[in-house]
Length: 319
Image (cartoon, rainbow, N blue to C red; front, side, top):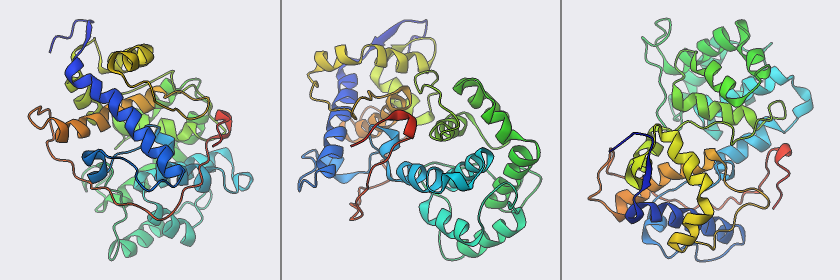
């Protein structure tokens, strides 16, 4: 693939990016309105795909409502960022409820040994990490610690509490600065640094424009490679190009019925995410187009638990 600053979409595949965005958002609204039939697309019926808007996914909704804004006044800004970080390291609602139920998580009460012991017990009967994405943390990854969960807890204590990383994040002047700071810490690579920066930004203590910075994850890179003949100098160029020409491509491919969240067009994080989901969709739609993984791992399992949607206060978005 040419990569000299020129951006050339591949119409045969890029159209599915806009199809996915429209149909996945249609599914969101149909589910919100309790429709019986969510989609006629057999691929979207069979496999699990995240929402167009990252903040609409069940785990992000739990983070916003239950970890950040519930009892907000009880905690310091550093406590809130710490709680976000611990929640997101495991990225599993059940793990958070178990862990926080036994040990209230604050900068003053954070006890690596106690938290690790609790998780070791939990791990005997239940998974403690989400399978949404791979987490680093082998016995050799940090200080020779034998268990992955203790590796992460120890790193959090060392870098974010003792070395005042939480305060550094709170003092950041841009999302790029938050990302770059997180990227310096052990275990946190490009993908997680960007994800955590977005999660911190849901809090009332950071309020950076989500269009001010983007980093393409591995899945998004696969989607970009499928959707473009030439993607520019960086993968992020392709994401920004997509945002800049969003309406033009909707019209070009005939997907103009997209209904966004009220007053909020998809941001760079959402468009990045949709490249990852389009990569997954194309594995089933165009199986001969092999870029990286060829199998979709997670099947769709409907949940009977209705989500009452809530968004960061600074967004002023209500449904």
